[in-house]
Length: 308
Image 1: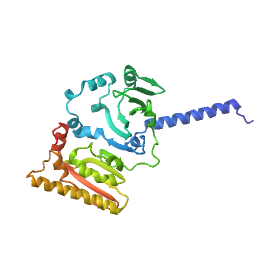
Image 2: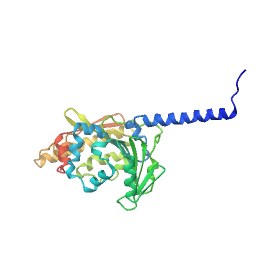
Image 3: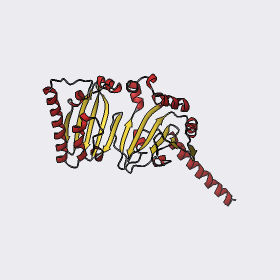
Image 4: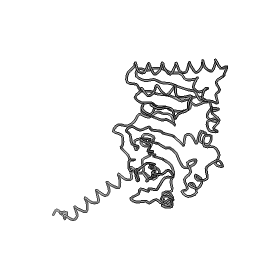
């Protein structure tokens, strides 16, 4: 004799199956390692400048300590933050992806976090935590800091004009996976970011102004032999535009060399002029690729504020 399932038994089975599927999806998402592409895809995409830093690679290479300086030089406010939260980027941060749009900042950080301490810190700063999102006032008026755990080792954080705006960060923000540079540090910017370069170092204005005519610009920094290299990748509307950008940047480099020669100055590896005059540019169809070798002396000068 066949045994029939009672309706309540079928309902219970369906509930168990659904609960198991939800748990399995949650476990898979929580256990999956988020690489650079996954971190970037969590950020708002449109009209944004994006930055990625592989902090762990910089730490292992010794560059992080070189750029950060000694702990004795750290601001007291930062040391207070470390003491209160147990989080120190020198040891606990492995990677950060950032998006900048309209004056707002969105961050996705991978590392090691004490979630209870972070929530307590937010409340101690006159903030509140509700539905996993913590929100607190920033030090700048009319700004809010909000954050929540994307995963056990990934923190979503926003510094914006709107409170709880960290909800803008989450998986699947990009309709198509981004093509990311292989270097451990890079910045990708739309062309309008270079429409006004007055806030950038004076010596770079002539190099960066032509980029306002491009479509998208990527600067990437990575190792090249026993030194670093800055690589520029410019996407233009057509080969003619790319040729014009390459020609203008090559001409600007040549003019800088002549000016230094006229003033009987020798480019130094420890200042910006030494980096800029070593630039080389090449057109590849609708793209322009530029490279600048960077000696350790320049990184040291930049870290200590001695770069000219």
